[in-house]
Length: 229
Image (cartoon, rainbow, N blue to C red; front, top):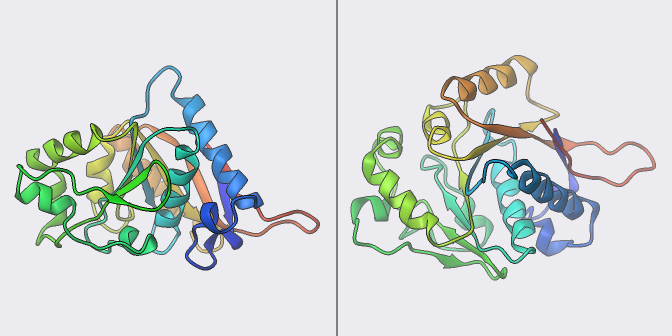
């Protein structure tokens, strides 16, 4: 299991930029390393980041993880697949369109990668909101768009809607190499977290671990982020 401190959620939440020498930033680097070691036998090219419920910090975790992964020289593409409440573009100060849905609508469109200002990290925004996000994510056209985006980087990180809210995350989990489940340690109850894990397992998701957000540091220790299976 991993945990992200309150410090990691302050400001824009991009501690890898704002406080790169902090304990929280080091925790994201540890998370990146753990994921890399977990894929020695089975490569993780596409990684889904989702949460049990809304407002648990999944997008902040994904953005900081992207920055940590890029420090090793890898090209990271962060894709906003939360088509209902897309926030990834705003976290980096980018525009929300063109984006993922633009590629699905126009299969001749090149991946609309946006530079983030971080070396090795680019973003594909969600794009125009579709009338039925679950149907779009399950479509063959989306699969082809994802394949095209995947060719643009070494690791593709997908931000998905919360597991217990809609079926989007379960649909995406069946398409990717691994999944991280984000849980707010101060809000999320055990039963919803268990149901979220069971939903992912039912579709054959490869759950790499759970990331705790809103972790309180013990007295005398620095705030930190941790990940566990």
